[in-house]
Image (tube, rainbow, N blue to C red; front, side):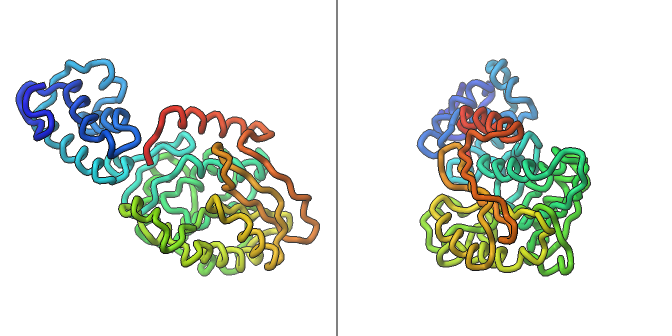
Length: 323
């Protein structure tokens, strides 16, 4: 590659391989996956699949495209999520568009989808609510796997719902979207499964130093990180059909406090689930009357849905995906 390898990469003779090498140097220490980031950014800018970036390193790159690669690499080096830069993220095998109006869907949230599917028998029409839908990732994954389900996705953010609706159209799935501050716009409605990945980062958590590009509204759970979870737990029973289940994603150190809050509000812990790293991640709750005994599931799972989900997440872990 011609030109200064640590400066602008706009010289005649730039190649795909040269850009990859330069980008890796720039991203080393700034990204947990510099090579993957470099390949995906260059594939995005050049309009080629990543496989082409790998297969044809000698292919020349026009100056204008080299300039755009440089701009995106510099933004990634400053910590901007890769998904915002390439305008997309895969979630539960669905290609989703994401913008700074929504959180980047995390692989660990696929566990929440697995548990929703485990409570939705195939071929039966059930009502599902994804509360705080963001990009629509959970709602769309559930609808894709259970097309017979009636899926509603709610969010307080109109900008997030714009992204979610566009994703539904993009993947061709019929989901109902509602602008609502938790259950406020859903008066009188009941569901068989309510799924929620709420804000649960404590306001003063140091994690916000690394999350500055994502919407704080979707992350900040108040002083102890539990404000949104309290609000959902306080109102959800009025919106759950008999025998229904409430599934909540939570922080790895919040389970004990969350169980205490839930039981005080008349919930029964039906199941607890951990992610692949062994961290407490999802709580399944039912109305206390006639609820099933508690059970504890690790990430290995016990049914076909969970096995498929774990296999998918294992593959992603091996790819060392960036946030």
